[in-house]
Amino acid sequence: MKWRKYIRITYKAVKMIIPNVEIYATGGVVEDRLTVKSDIDLLIVLPHTPTFNEAIELRSRILEEAEKLGLPLYAPIELHIIGKKELKKYMKKGKVLPVNKV
Image (cartoon, rainbow, N blue to C red):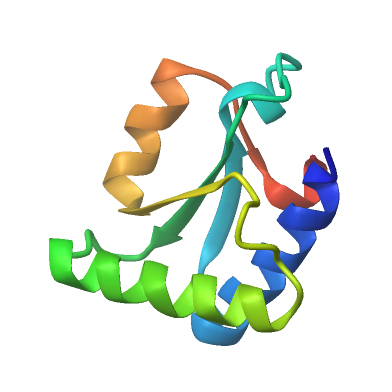
């Protein structure tokens, strides 16, 4: 799997849509348990907790931009668009690393 390439493309797309956002990886990618069937969990952390509609809109825009940058439709990217408060919950559940450390 070309997961590092998929992360780089998605990172660029996120920064084009929301320049000042924090981006973290979590799950199998950072816990060294990535398999062929794994998805790539990325946390897109906004300064505020997004509404459901805002999260859907951002996810759509990010994935459309990532596709333009070369992300294949079959890439197993899972975007979690959350606020700072939710980030703390993810950190308690498991390992969370800034994307540039993956």
